[in-house]
Length: 153
Image (cartoon, rainbow, N blue to C red; front, side):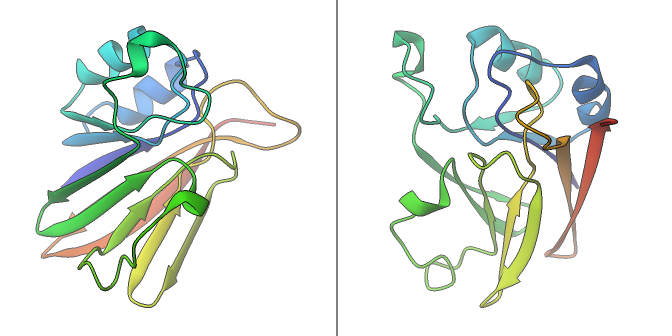
């Protein structure tokens, strides 16, 4: 199973991001969406799980949760925009992967049996940070991540 990971689009859904996410079995957006059209275009590619980011304050975002828990391919995922707002112990809750956004920095690390993934920002460039996204590949109940730069610096 291929789960496309995207975050911090801030109203800009680049063609490179759409190309990368095409063929995903599911897509996760880690917040700071920027507009409902972003979600419509992503949902046209695959089933979509999305959380609200700190910049998602417009009335249309009120129905979007701040956290989301899903199970895909036998792996429990927890999605939250800013890791600092995480109010539970993922390992104790049986969560295997935490997907976040907010920092605009693509990163992946495993701590305490939990894979923490931030696909980075796929939207407007911020400082010298890369334009990035990721994919979670789930096979036989195991998850591994691949982070990619979408637009060269």
